[in-house]
Structure formats: C-alpha cells, structure tokens
Image (cartoon, rainbow, N blue to C red; front, side, top):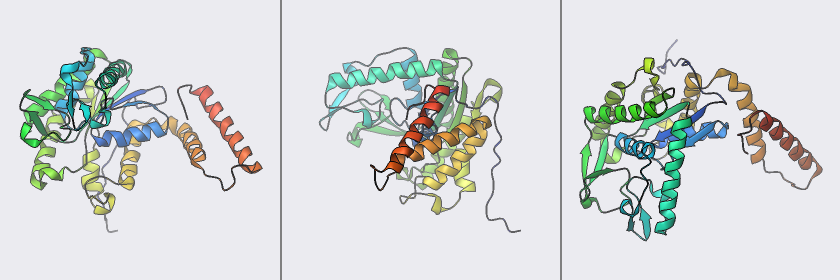
Amino acid sequence: MIKLQTTITVQQERDPIDYGSEVLLLGSCFVAHIGEKLDYYKFKTTINPFGIIFHPVAIERSVTRAINEEEFTEKDVFYHNEQWHCFDAHSTLSALKKEEFLCVLNDRLTLLKASIERATHIVLTVGTAWVYRHIASNNIVANCHKVPQKKFLKELLSVEAVTESIDKTVTLLKAENPSVKIITTVSPVRHLKDGFVENTLSKAHLISGVHQVVDPRQAIYYFPSYELMMDELRDYRYYTTDLLHPNSTATQLIWERFTKAWIASETEKTRKEVSSIQNGLRHKPFNPESEAHQIFLKQLAQQIEQLQRQYPHMQF
C-alpha cells in the first residue's frame, strides 16, 4: 500500500480534561481555536482575558501582573487613533473612554488571577519569537496598536530568552496553583510578514525554548499542534485563503488529536448530547409558528434542562 501521509502518534495523557475540569487558555490565535471547541462542548473555560497574545514575554507579563495583583492605572494606557489602548492587551479590548477601559482591564486582571487559582489545566501557546520593544519605555509589547513602527525596535528572542520567559511563567503558575497541569504548544500559524526564513527561525527558537521547560514528571506537557500541521497536514488545502492560518478542516483534525490526548474518553456521551443541542439551537425552521416546530422547541428545552441538572455550569 502506498502511503500518502505521515502520521503523528498521540496518546492519552494522565488526568485529562473532563466536565469537572477548569481550563485556562493563554496565547496565540491557535488557543482561540481550541478554546472555541472546548466552549462549544461546554467545558469550563477561560480564553485569553487580555485577547490574543503572540509571544512568551507577553504571556509572562500578563501572568505576573495578575498573580501580583498589579492593577492597571493611567500610566499603562495611551490614546491613539481616537481610542484608548494598552500595550499589554489586544486591540479588541481598546475603548473610547479611558475610565471604562481601565475598568475593563482590571476586571480582566481579576478574572485571570481567579482562573489561575481554579484551573486544573492551563494551555500555553506561543506563536512567534519576534517581538517589538517600545523605545520610549524600553518594554516589549504584546500589541503595537498600529502605532508608527519607528517607535519600536524589532527583536528576535533567543532560545535562552524564550526558555527563561516560559520557565518564569510556569514557575509562577505552579507557585500559585501547585497541582495544575500545563500544556504547552507552538502555534502552526505562519508569520510570513516577518519573512519565510525569519518565520522558520522564530518557530525553531520557540520549539527549542519550550522543550527546555517541558517535563511530564512536573505536569508540564507538550502537544504537537505545530508538527501536526507541518507534517501530517502538509498540504495547502488545509489552509485558509491567506495560506497562513489553518482552515476549519485542519482545526477539526488537530482538535480530534487534542481530544485523544487531553479530553477524557468518558465525556464522549455528554459531548454528543451538547453537540445535538447546539445543532438544535442553530436550526432555522421554515415555519417558526408550526406545531411541529413548537414540539421541537419543547423537546430541546427538556434536553437542555436535563443536561443542566447534571452540569449546572452549562449555559446555552
């Protein structure tokens, strides 16, 4: 038989995620994709309180600030393009009014600290080793917010710097929550604006740095999302039209591997029930007033009520 694809073996890890677990996901947009899947199946999740974060230093800064309860103040925000921004948060959080923006930032800070304390599993995904240092403050930023590039210096984190940053993050998380299981991964999204060679170098630094920290004996694991995309799904048909991001098919295939490794097999029945409800809620009837549709809605409500009696946290 001719093989047309290499296969990466993924085994189920100890203490996988179930419906009693609380999962915190921090990092690049790959975290958002996996987080959306977990949220769809109604697992208890917190996804990127400060929005998408691309590099390890930004993750470290967010975790450090949350654990130390270092509130955001006026010195942490700035006005640009008719909105208030923060270099430590994604632009999706930016706001028109400074006071409201600071309230949002500090609410997210409280949410992140609480999520760290409660989490049974934390997923950390890094996407790039290229960072931008704000010249005036000498700080590496999480997001440039379209501030002119001349106000930043572009730098490549060394393998040692990546290792140090991730190690600090993991140490902080473990000090705050000793029993938490930490799942690291490198995002398969290609950052080709940096250049082809530069993107490969960046990913190499991330992979090398992450693996210096991974230690299953300390409940620090690695999930091969990057390797799945680069090897098993080695074809442009698995990318969106920008040829940079995994498409829905690739995301689903990687999710299935994540499920095998990190989702408890005994959750399968509940996941199917949740999916049935989600499909029912998305159903668009030809005649909303028909008797058949009213019966369908009643049965759906009963199905939701029955599931919520078993899992009160589920909201549809």
